[in-house]
Length: 436
Image 1 (cartoon, rainbow, N blue to C red):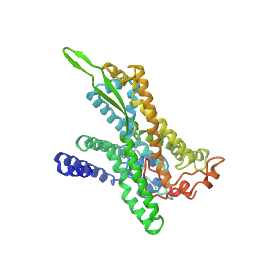
Image 2: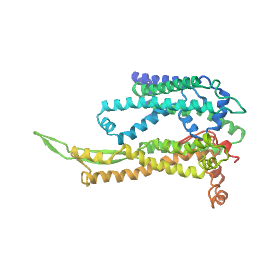
Image 3: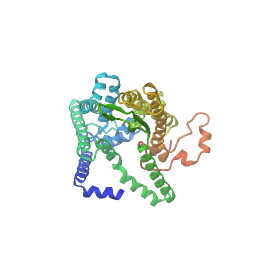
Image 4: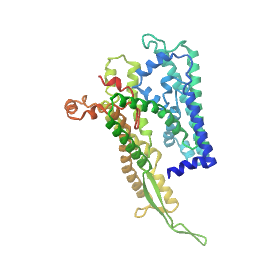
């Protein structure tokens, strides 16, 4: 099956053109990732990026393909578009005008897409201006190296123009891949940014094997775990619960219509990766505010340190946040009452369930159960990098932390010394934490 699919890529002219077109646009995206925004010191920026990896800066840097830490023209990446899309989806529930547009078919979808583009530009302007001001205020990094050569409104306007244009260009690339390429343009751009560091990670892992820092058994175990995780992700993402729907027979003139049977596919992971993005962004906010507004050693800085990666409180809130946002986002994008009403209008019913309110309650019950399974799966995938890289730091847990740290195996509390990022979210600045 896989061999036939690969063969079709080269044998079917239209498919070959789409694949080559997609690869070409991804190459353009990677070329732009090496063009730095004017007026910024690269040496000081490298130090600042290392210091700020544990904040929201590190989260955005992952989705931008390390463009943010290098302040390239694509520094904002695809995050403004993702944020605008999420905001429009939330507004669709509470704003009747957008709700009507969402039900108007293709025309309504085009209008919502246009509003999403406008929102992307607006968010890009706000974020790029904030980045410019933040860089100007970080006047002393690495022993007094200035981040900005010539601060002022000239630098701010240049940064806004450069980064906003770059974000709009990335949005255009994603839309072109979706329409004229192989599809899922935005996801492919995010994927291209995340996996760009994979070759270097493989080289580093092989060097660890050669120098004895990682044993052959651990490498084989890690490879098997990666394959198992990928298989589990594919299995769950393709999994759905089929709810059988029967349509009653009805006479129209002299012809009989209906009587067919179909199903409603309810996905196990309806929310996709959105709950992970929400939970990570909210948990990164206190650390970001503490870093930028409070001096080191203050009570706010100490409190925010409890939300550091691999800390027990962070892991607990991260898992709880993912589960909460899975239910929250699923409730936004899937309305059982609308589904039940549409079924009733067209003469559909679930065998054994009364049409109307009882059907909506039945669908909601099934959706609640499978969403819990999807949320647990998403939380495990998202927290997996913490276990692989640094382990779970149980010592800070009050009362029982020290005893747990002494009882649990070292690979649980110290991780498997993995130097690359594999799983749901990227974890950074781990090596600097091991000695603390």
